[in-house]
Amino acid sequence: MKLSVQAALSKSNLIRSKNYTDNRSKPVIAVTMATSRQGSAVVNHLSRTNVFQIRAITRSPFSNYSKQLAKLPNVEIVKGDLLKPESLEKCFSGVDGIFGNTSPTKGWVLGRGSIVREYEIEQGRNLIDAVKKLADLGTLKHFVFSSVCKPKDPLKNEPAPGHFSSKWSIEEYILLNDLKNISTIIRPVSYYENFNSNLPGVKISEKIFPGVVNKNKAWQIIAVDDIGLWTRAIFQTPEKFLGEAINIAGDELTGNEMAALWQELQGTSSVRYSMVPRKLINFIEHDIGIMADWIERAAYGADLKKLKTLASELDITMTTFSKWLKEKNLRSRSVQRKLTFSF
Ligand SMILES: NC(=O)c1ccc[n+]([C@@H]2O[C@H](COP(=O)([O-])OP(=O)(O)OC[C@H]3O[C@@H](n4cnc5c(N)ncnc54)[C@H](OP(=O)(O)O)[C@@H]3O)[C@@H](O)[C@H]2O)c1
Image (cartoon, rainbow, N blue to C red; front, top):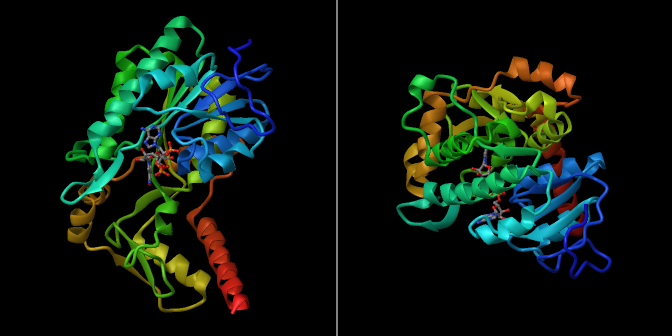
């Protein structure tokens, strides 16, 4: 099918206009928040299949993140904003699939932090309204919404973090709009990448492995790249996933176990887990404090045993935390070497 033509792109696949040429032979999948950690993992893995054309949606098509994505095969960058419904209609015109993700993060304000539940819900409402129009036209085949993992113990869910309940409210809006049959909801737990922080007191060092959860509480986590792998599998095997919701995680460890892994990799005997004081978290980002309480009380409820079985059926190699840390350790060592050589 041919989409409306205007201003195509010279040599690169950066989109310069809201209308674009698409002589497509492959199904087109739009990815919202494509420059985010999660979105870029999804774009990357869909791109590698070479069976999809990907519309990577961003508010800033010429940012460095967008330019990196534009280098991938089968990817075009499209300007769009989840807060501007008219922009979404253009981004989604004629697509076969959509990966939808929303952000709770607004500018940081003292006493509030940066997480705003209503900010995310507004994006979700715009997103689902646009999906609904395409579903009614009968053109959209598959909508994947990325939410967040539901609790292991639902009776201990309250109070839930605002940036979790916002996503679950968007899930309800999907059902309310009768979109279940063309939708899959993917619900990741906390990213391994949260441990990449450079903030003083939260940065991993030779002696300290910091985290936001109590040292003895097992805690499910996942590599952001694995969210891309699962999403790729979901779009490639829709018959398995349409109408389904799936909690996803890659590993489950206590803070003490994480610190022990880091110690082993460092080859030292002096690493200890340090929990960032809850009062400090509450002050800086109140909703993350609520999240840490929630993880300790209700806990993420992904079924790792079932996921491993499903992953092997789908040719997904789940990244263990140990593997991710090993790669992080190698990366930081090579950076140190570079610094040493440069002196
Ligand atoms: N951190 C975790 O452990 C974790 C775990 C599970 C789920 N999640 C959820 O996953 C989602 C993504 O998080 P992330 O850490 O991957 O994101 P991120 O790397 O912080 O990126 C945020 C992105 O939001 C985009 N964005 C912000 N406002 C937008 C708007 N109005 N319209 C379109 N795009 C907008 C920005 O893209 P442009 O500026 O390029 O437009 C940017 O790429 C969030 O909802 C988060 O709560 C996070």
